[in-house]
Length: 147
Image (cartoon, rainbow, N blue to C red; front, side):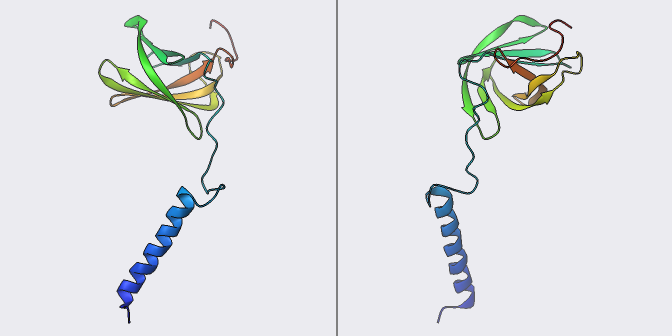
């Protein structure tokens, strides 16, 4: 006869393996399957911006130009794009630090103008996190062009 503790472990292992099977190959309709974000096309030019501190990033294809008041011309870096479940991810390296940008749909205000943007943006550069808004050349902001 199998000991009670061993039998319990065997039962837990069986249920766990069924769960893994369901997640990794148990059929077409898997729990948690969500289509990749398609709200921003590969050819769209994305502008992200933030205040306090002021910053901006312009994504064109596989390049991001990062600008600040101290570097108005900006620094261009190579990036990769990832369409996640709820938005677009951008990653690259800026001056030796990892740069990650998450662009998600949602009304956003920069807090300094009467503009409303269609995307919220979160950027991390190394350990620093910046929050801002975004728009594309095909999905603009509403409000004054030059506040």
